[in-house]
Length: 233
Image (cartoon, rainbow, N blue to C red; front, side, top):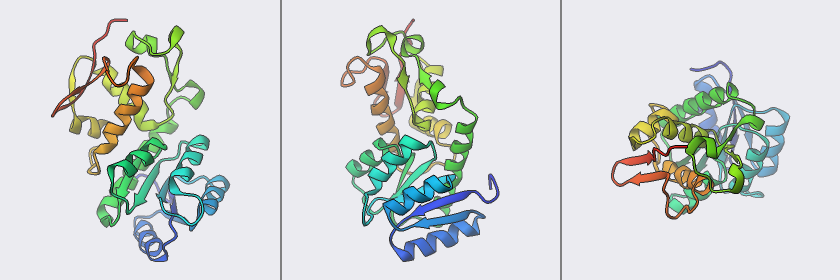
């Protein structure tokens, strides 16, 4: 395990799920704090910031997506949504709200443990990165073209989105296979829903393309992956 006694905030109003997931996480050596509502979750996260948040979507007060948005405004803690909703639209909404991962119930114990380990790795890597005020990508300097006037900087407050942009720019002109991207951004043991990558690509395009519907910088290579255009500054 990456660290002893990392704290996991588990947000779910189903007592059976809370008991079973808590047992699994404690077996892995984590400290588990549970919350049965959105209000409890926000209070717990503010009182003692966790290392990872496992967040259900259907809660009795605030919805999980709204909780995710609020947490993302306050913290960069990795957030994993656990939901019975399997539709792609639900996954897109959750990831767009700032979640780092989206898992559909029921989920195997081994996969959940692997996802938490990957989230912890990302969280620890983020603490070594520049502070949020410096985590701005100067689009003109990076890609040579800007969507906004005067080359204004674009805030990339999602760890995976920032890592994805850096990876693509570092390999500009080269087609990167989807699996390669997943291994470099989410870790070698990522084996979840690959729609997460498509969501982050869409988010990046909205930030850096003049016309996100007709991208010229971040290109899709159908059936293979993505390529960042080798654009001269």
